[in-house]
Length: 368
Image 1 (cartoon, helix red, strand yellow):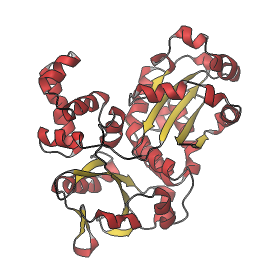
Image 2 (cartoon, one colour):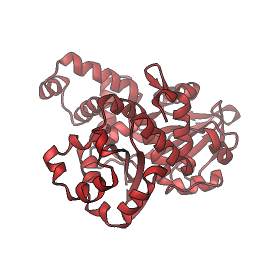
Image 3 (cartoon, helix red, strand yellow):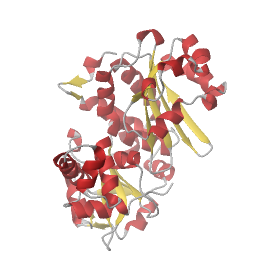
Image 4 (cartoon, one colour):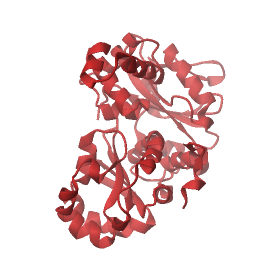
């Protein structure tokens, strides 16, 4: 399928993004989503793989399903270092083989020589998602060996989609890539606080875990959801009002009564056939509880707040108490560049000033 079907100006069409979110709860749609991602990048197919502790769930586009079925059942997966390299890079973008191996290393890689190359595979663009739920997810497009490495322009398109893919994959992985039959079934599989909302922010249905949110939420007139953290509530209202445009912050921190970060909320649209599960629902607000034991990884910060790699790195340094001037010196960039990144971080995290960012990041980590 051609890239033109999905591209509109400089961005990806909202219709395709809607289908990504639809696949959150209807995993049978992932093979088509992966096929379309492959079409955008002139690749053969795509793969979505999720692991947590000893469990493994996966799906792939039809064109490469047989190959990756062999890959997993034949023991190649356990021997292949590609997934480990992608996750260990902690780089929240799509990477090709040449981002973590040299050409000589590829030529001497037994998995590529004995498995991928004989199947006319061998070039990919993959991204690793280390999610707050403890799931480790790898999503990739797989290209024919003879076509050559995936070009930077295609990587840019994939990176534009990455925040949406991350939210959808988080939900899908949490549900074990299984279709929910009802809202209650979905809530049970997710096992975190979830509120189903209508267009006006009225709560339609919620998971039993929402009972633990008394320090974070309240119910206003006509059962409209109100977040007690005023800054978070402003972001929530903006996200709800412009959800169809996908232009507002869709992940944000929520502070408790003591002013400490207590949750990270993700706004997930209800799209397409997901309405069969959630009836009149417009969006789901998914809450991930925050622990306070260690600093968050750069990848986790990117997943939570849609930060760029540079912004996430700056945010992590701020949380560790490093000054703007020292961050600039360490990174070999100007102080003005770092200050611009700080302004973006403030906007995306829902904070109003830099000390709030420092407090948020220094207290933020998520239990697995």
